[in-house]
Image (cartoon, rainbow, N blue to C red):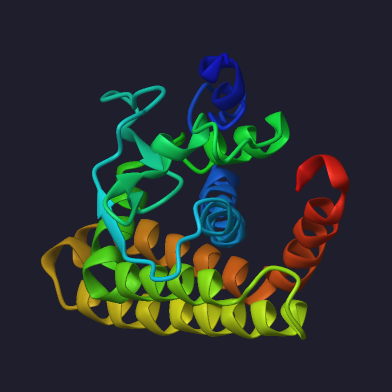
Length: 229
């Protein structure tokens, strides 16, 4: 798989060859969309591997495509806070596991849950790292574990997954608020107030308008097709 080709589309520049401010919203949206997707994919792994008790941990990103530009004050921001370990094994271990026997499209989704990157201003990476320190990783772990707990083809499967996702989205907004309060009390906020306020504004907008219900419905419909089971 040509990862360079896949992720090059996430490097968004304007006509002056600088990162487009719209990429801030794109980055936040991709984080939410990929996280929701990963929760459903981990359910498939748990079913294939007969995992009854799931433990979720994190490790540093193993794959990163692209770098920022010092002149433009940009960095490559990850689409997920961390790469995921399921019962001590990286999700990469399961991609080509014969017991999982995933369809190529599902494998591609697994690849796309990795630490793919989007080029954004340095302050975006700063907000992301502070968000992770102020509760994002905890609600991320909780969301994934609860998703795995919803059995595939169980009664009220869709509604249960929507409730889990709703709790995660609400948690995102709450922890982002805590992050904003802490950053506002620091010296960096005085120096970069305009940039940071814009980031938070776009993040809040994306969180408030992210259609997680439609995302879950689309994934469940796809996974019901014989070739994706």
